Length: 355
Image 1: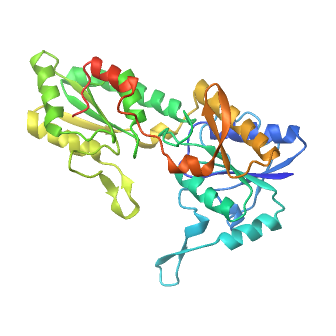
Image 2: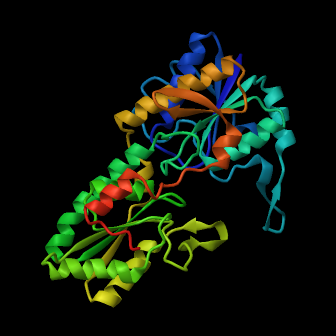
Image 3: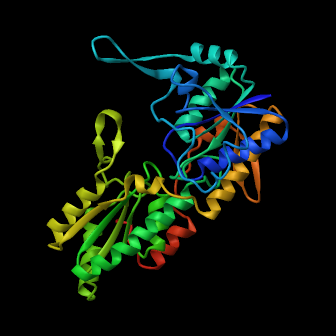
């Protein structure tokens, strides 16, 4: 068995742990492993495949990033190619990909990625590629799994930042608006905001009214609390409004913190500052929880390959790691349940969601 491993989409703490677990589990079975660099890049003429053995994966469990590199613009179904005139077009390079798989004698692929990558490999599986998926996203929004690795680390990073913001906000009697990642799901904002004692949490699942946000800040001011902390997911939307984009051409979210901060300052007269955590949430060493989950995912993915359960994804459904169809995972993305105990707890503690 010659097994290929790829990482696609945005990086997340724990990717290297998945790679190490998959390689060691495969080698234990007598298999050979290779890594596809930069998503599908080295299968489509962008560099060579990377040999993966015990030596190559030694000491990488605690490292952030991915030793294989990654890309969020490497879709072989819609590969961007530059024309001679400098413009760009999209081409389907599926046939080239399959030819490369055969030429490199690859028997199966473990693809580690989020909703986008998993959607791509599901289509490739339908076309005949023997593939097993491993869910990866700091947003924790992949369907059919209770958790994805990287989320716990991202929440810890965001919580630490909110803790630090508290002291400067209180010292200057300011409102601080902290923007965290979360395109369609507000798990990071909700968990970090609650753990970091935020006063307002804005998430995509609950459209907010800026008047309600300002009312909360005014009430705190009247109670002698002359500072406030607002935590906003990048995909948070005002009632009747749309998500904030910093790059409409590529649908890159961002800017909600600046817009909310400006509105708060205009409406309350309180000095307000915004802070965008951005890619800081993707970096750094994974937490113990994320390392363990990633290691379990990597080993389980190899077991699925051994059982020839292709077109499936490993998923956490406590207390076990199980196999679920890729189709199920991409069809039902996770969102924060509005009746969740976490939201109820936040409301009981007096945290406003701007609704």
